[in-house]
Length: 262
Image (cartoon, rainbow, N blue to C red; front, side):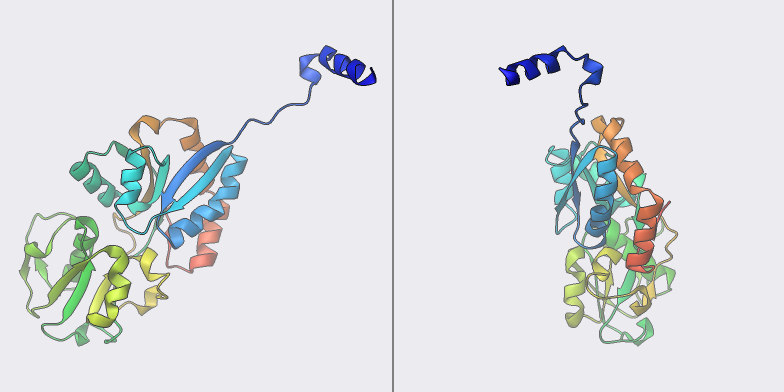
């Protein structure tokens, strides 16, 4: 009887006096490559929760599947690629995916276990580069910038080995998946390694025998499906990432191997 009276009294309370129910968090599945991208997102996760997001981080070991999964609706966003790579994926695969914010830059380096400088790489030496057009092209441009090869004019940001018009040292180029470049170092004279793979492999920028200028076009981005770009959760995700506390986390954790873009 007392329980029934208490329930009746509760139902009689004005709606504004009832305890408020918290809105459920918006689930956002976001893809990333292992290493710094995923580590940064783990730091973003509690910040995103304050913005109403339940960030679910899924790791992918290559550069292709995260965009495929995003396009197919298996992810809401991804954070692993720079804009030239995304542009190439859109052109080649027809993805309706867009960048909504820049995140971090990983200056590209060429590393070697055999040589202390690139001058020590012998004529006919082997150099591993990435087998995707944007990252492989980025590595070739780095070599051209250092006077080691010359590329055909007009190739833009995506030159290939076929575009090399001068190679006085007769270097041999081996193309492998970007994630595999640190693993082939024992088998080649040098390898071009993206920063997000160099760091987990134990390399610092100072270990590189050639190093890219970090102020280039290769800043990484958060990408979403085009139809979602104006959704409130996208704005919340970007605001959660691009905060002073995440910048401080990046600076402290990576010591200059990863550079915040904001």
